[in-house]
Image 1: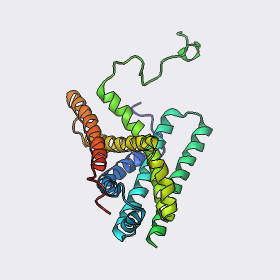
Image 2: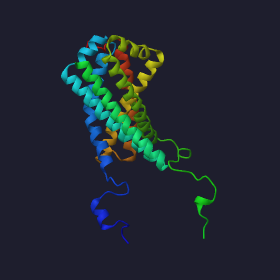
Image 3: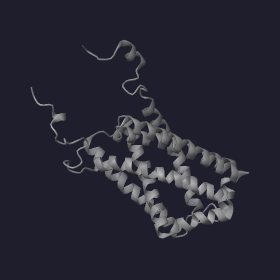
Length: 125
Length: 139
């Protein structure tokens, strides 16, 4: 026997995870997107270090800055969820706890994106 | 038949064998990539807290700055800055590996040392810029 996989399983290419290389690929795509976004974020954070509250409000209410900050926060949170999932997959082996933690991570990711975007909308308006 | 090792009652060593391997820079950089990633999850929560505090007007922002300006707050911010620099540099190293570059044993060790040196340099430079008054150029 050359392979334990059924022909159907091989065609689907999903492997034991049932999700194929999707997780791996999304982690890389978000990582690449975060390279320029992180450089902008570092530029923004250094530029706002020690700034007064009106100056920060002024900077973040400019459309491009608001958009870049929202994108940085959203893709970071998504990338974070993918990363923490790997840690959970590696160390948590009890099925119930594992599912609970994975759901919790997804909830935190969505809450983080929602909070950051809502705060940015409030700042801009 | 050999006795089933799973049932012998001995706690068998589990991978990764952190207690028996000699420490290598490649090993440490791998562990630190995960550790800084987890630390930056805390950083993401602080970023959300900062944005919400700014959206709450000057009183809200002051309530954030009370914590950020404390010695412990500054230490945490330095930790986030270094974690950010390390995860950024080492992430690029990982992406290069994904493309098939830098897998040679000695190359991987060299880039490992480089990433550690560079990340500390970036974090210290960032704080030096702030303390010497060269940051804050956006106000």
